Image 1: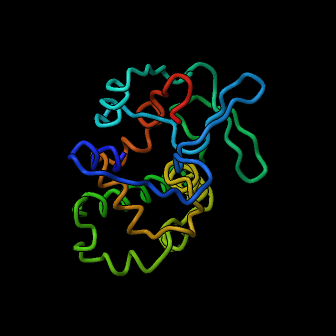
Image 2: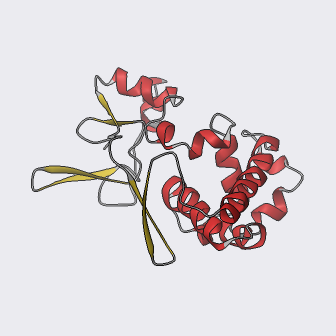
Length: 197
């Protein structure tokens, strides 16, 4: 995309790719007639730049399958539940809410264009999100759910591989509302027909 913008500005450009394919996190393949996508594949309604690109390229999207129930695995237990409810105990639910509010507070204070100017930037960048979870989230179930939602689903990196500052910055650079980024009905809203790749 950067090369495309440079070309549009009238410059010549050559792209060097580190892998044996282009696309980075956008990767997919057809396996036994079914398109499988790996990496980034979802479009939220507030992601207007990618929606404009999809339209410009003449591609179509489809809405996420929303029927049925979710399955949550924790502590060796398998719990089937509705999309908008988490199968947490009252204690774990309260700890989860407190942790989300802590993240939201930092995200609201961060300038998405200059995260390093936040008063706690150095401290937050010196610890991993996993270390932040262990220090700030009191209940193991709440910690596991937040790890799943933020590291596994949103950032798609192990929680020990990115800093707490990066996490807060990612939340600040969206709509600014952390709840929007944890709302499956928004972040998992649409996909590109035939695959994002």
